[in-house]
Image 1 (cartoon, rainbow, N blue to C red):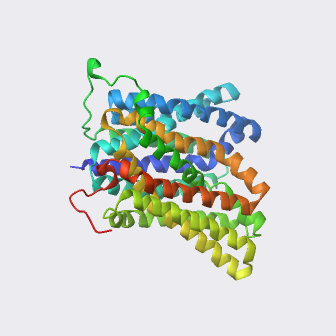
Image 2: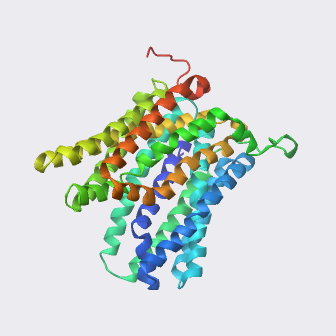
Length: 405
């Protein structure tokens, strides 16, 4: 008998492998098979991605009403349907409709999966499950990327089509694994449902402050994908091949270390460990500033890897711990709505980061790193200030084991 936790991990891994296969070729797929210019493909994909912001609050309502598992599984089916439409796309309008389906499923996933973890795991088990999720997701994304690279080496349109169809099948398989996990959610009778909808969330000032405090950190997370490749190649003069190596350092580090690091962190207050992670992010950003001012040659290469390792350490400290903190801080009756609002602190920076960080980098590379460092340092301080106002069960994952700190 496969346990619920193993089924959850299998679902997350299969999901990540499907995403890892498709994400690296998302722009190239439509350009290669429809002949549309890359610029047009990019605009259509961005327009479709905006729907993720719309599906986010809808997902929150659905989670509270029907349960997180239902929304997670439904989102998988929606994304699979979108991928199965991709081979039939031959012009902009069908492409937008197919991309929009996938975006709707993507947008519903973060608040739904966080709510689901909160339903099936309590206390430090929640931290450990989120850590295992992050670890396996990184491993799955990497494996999917390798499979896609091997398939594309064949150099045929059929390889693109196979990757898309297999990605859709992966989402169906993930839905199968997650859908069999018992859920503790009980449908609330209509007469007993929480009135006021999202007004309940906006009255929760502590949770809103926690959400706002995450915005600078979310921008910090985007550095690896947006700013760092441009900075090290154009500002520091490093080889473009180094970009992939640094990405591997980060993803492999998370895959290998997230679980043991999080197990160690469950002894301490989540707020303080998340704040420590943000502080390490800040130090890594300042390290990149120093590299641009003082380093050359071998020292520069060593410094780039050291700063990237610091960034990875910040992610290890912050990622799973902050997710468990937020899931535990959300009131159970409106957890879906609360987490969908919190997810906006990720969705908006992800949408704005390419334009904003590129503009800052063009204006001043040093200025960009200093602003990011100051922002995440502010997030760390805000986390510490919010600690007394947060529920004790959110701050401490082990209420029965209070360590001296």
